[in-house]
Image 1 (cartoon, rainbow, N blue to C red):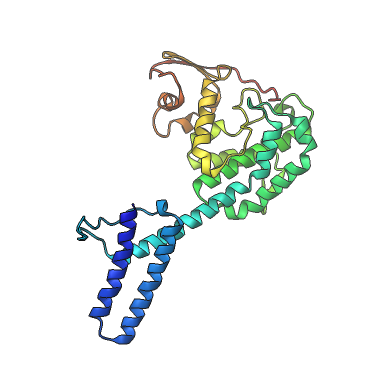
Image 2 (spheres, rainbow, N blue to C red):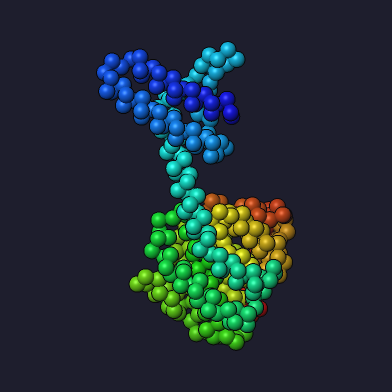
Amino acid sequence: MKIALTAILAICLLSCSGSKKAIENKTDQNNEITESTKKTEVVENILSDSDDEIQETIEIVNEQGKVMKQTDSQDTVDELLNQKEQDKHHQTDSNSSDNNHELWNELLGKHVSINGNVDYNGFKQDSKDLQNYISALQADYSSIKEHSKAQKLAYWINVYNALTIDLILRNYPLNSIKDIKDPWDQRLWKFNEKWLNLNDIEHKILRKMDEPRLHFAIVCASESCPKLLNKAYSANNLDEQLTIATKDFLSDASKNELSENSIKLSKIFKWFAKDFKTDGSLIEFLNQYSDITIAENAKKSYKEYSWELND
C-alpha cells in the first residue's frame, strides 16, 4: 500500500516535470505547475490523514523503478479528491443522523429490559425527555428525505417506537393497546404540516422501503409483538440490528415454532405475507434467519396473538 501511495505522488510530480518541458508558453507553464503542485499537496494531506481509505488505482514500479502500468495521473488525483470528499460528507451525515437518537438510546437503556419488557412507569417519570426526543424527530422531518435509505429506515423505526410509547403513556395505566380507541389511527403528532398516525408511518412510509425485517423492529406494545430493542436503531449498524431482531423473533418459541416439516408462525407473517415474498417464497425468507432448515412444503399454521401490554 505504501509503495502504491508513494508512486501516486511520484506520478503527479512526473506529470508536473513533463508539463514544464513540453509547454513553451511561460504563463501556461506556471499555471499548470501551480495547479499540479496544489493537487499534489492535497493528495499528500489525504494520504497522511487516512491511508486505509484510498483504493489502489495504479500498478507501479518494479524493483528497478520502471513504471509497469499507470492510469492518467491527473484523473487519478481528481478521483482521489472526489472520493475523499464524498466519504467525508457521507460520514458526517451518518454520524449526525445517529447522534440525533442519543436521547432515545438513553431512555431505552433505562426503561427497557434486555428481554423487551417496558417499564411504562419509568417512562412516565421521564416523559419530558421523551417529548424532547419526539420534538427533535419532528424537527428532523424536513431534512430526512435527503438522507440515505439506512438513515431513513433508522429514523422512521425510532419514530414509530417512540410514538407508540407516547401513545401508551397518554392512556396509561391500561392492560392492552387495544383498550385505546383506534390506537393506530389517532393523528396525535405533527411533522411539518402533516398530522401523522402509526398506520401512516408503518404502511405509507416504512413498508414502501422494501425491507421486510422492519416488522421485527417496530413494536406495537404487546406481548406477541417482537421485543422492543433496548437501544436506538442506528444507520451505521442498521443491517446488523435488523438481522439480530429477525433471528431473535424467529427463535422465540412463544412467537414462532419451527421444524423441518411443520411451522407455527406469528400472525405477522399472515398479515404482511407479501412483504416476505419480494425475493422468493416465505420459506426462503425464514431459512435465511432460522437455525432450522425448513422444507418448502412444510405444514403451516399460525399462533394466537396476545395483545396484552409488553410490560
